[in-house]
Image 1: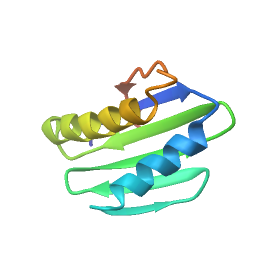
Image 2: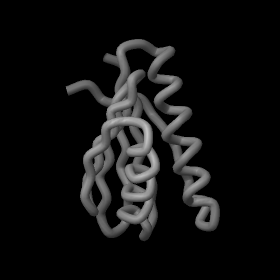
Image 3: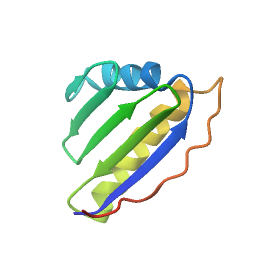
Image 4: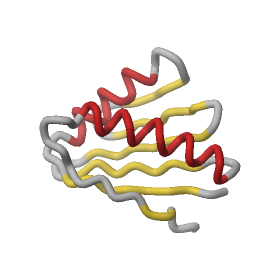
Length: 97
């Protein structure tokens, strides 16, 4: 299953994780706490982990096309929510286990 991941250096990782999850929960199934989040989009899944200095995000989907949609939605919202800070958000292929 194709996937992508990013680790965003930010002191606001937990805040962004919770903000993303609360926003997505209006339309899709979401579970989260201050350190972890899981979003189940109809077109892909997103997992998030926050610590004191970084937000790690992994997205997976059935196809490259649906992965691109998952990536777009998550990246676009994170960019909007972090507009003051403007963190460097660099995605790379997810390492297969």
